[in-house]
Image 1 (cartoon, helix red, strand yellow):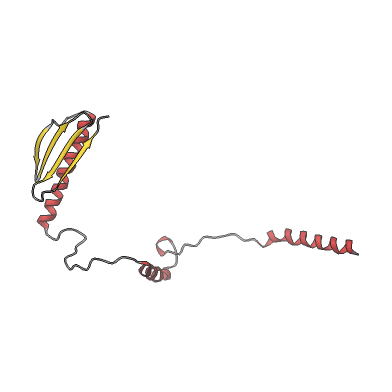
Image 2 (cartoon, rainbow, N blue to C red):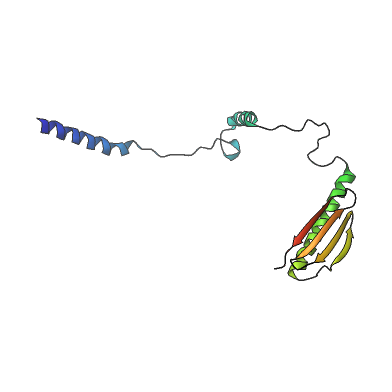
Length: 143
């Protein structure tokens, strides 16, 4: 009798284990974000979740302008300064790698005074902003 009950339980367990694969189904991914094909009704919910998780706030200053200084002339000056510094950095790289070498000396580019001096460890470059009084030093090592 015990043998029959035991074999019945083993048979039942094997039958249950084997039938589990019959209930499987294909998984299908459905995006949530409407920008990637999800439901358009999820947009407001996603926006409210993002606002709830936001941990920073804009500066309270009324003169805050993330797109520039506010003055067209000041923006132009900033763009010009960036172009001059970009050209200077290209010349420095060219100095290190060969072609159209920038000779050592004292230069003035717009509002910047630039001193270029070769040394044993590399090229020493000192850039000074004449208007603001700020300065920085860069050492470009030889390769």
